[in-house]
Length: 135
Image (cartoon, rainbow, N blue to C red; front, side, top):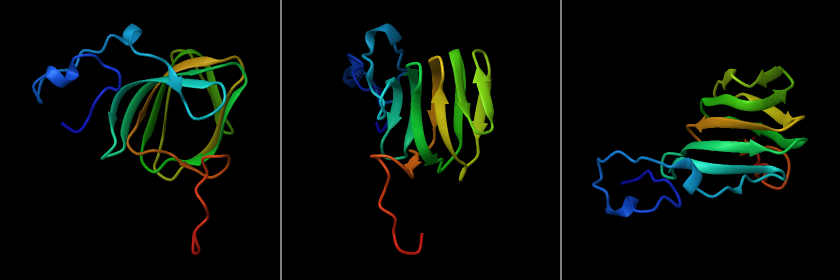
């Protein structure tokens, strides 16, 4: 099996084609890569890059400029998430096409469900990849 849920107890005992029932409360919050951002990883496939996670943003948390290498989907459960194009409030959904770039922030904090088909490419901040000649 390629995909998994980190910290999900007993999944190694399941048949490869069995459903994985994830009790969200049993999963730990882990570092989300930027100050004030944490996540619970629901599904991760490092080979393909797929990641589904609950992501919790503290009030004022920011994500530096990044590029989506494939479709990204976000459903906001609580609070709101903003970028230069608008605000996605609780109960709203936003998706971004491959190649889109933005900075994101949450003025009052939020909880969201995010689905990434490939990891983000960070263009600013500590996770930014060095600029290669010809980029």
